Length: 83
Image (cartoon, rainbow, N blue to C red; front, side, top):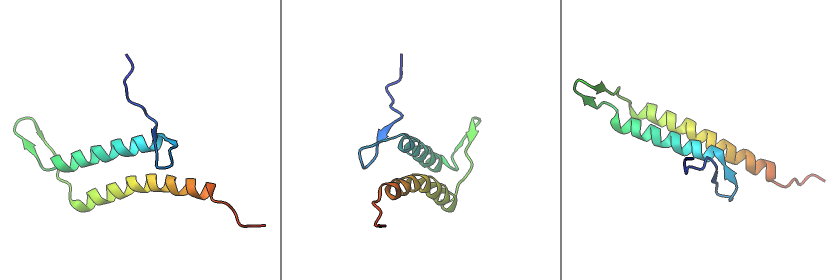
């Protein structure tokens, strides 16, 4: 039975965007990682700590991928004023 997850979601311009799906998944994973950082479950697991600077750098990296895609799409579609 196929999963009901669509890898292509619509971006702000209404176009299909596979990149947006991966950005959302990565964002969710990073937030979960930050929330459980430093948690110790006795005899089971210890999650390593993460500081806000490392979290911010990781979030900025993921958002730059998405924003870079949006920027290049707008530059490609911009009309040229050269005659």
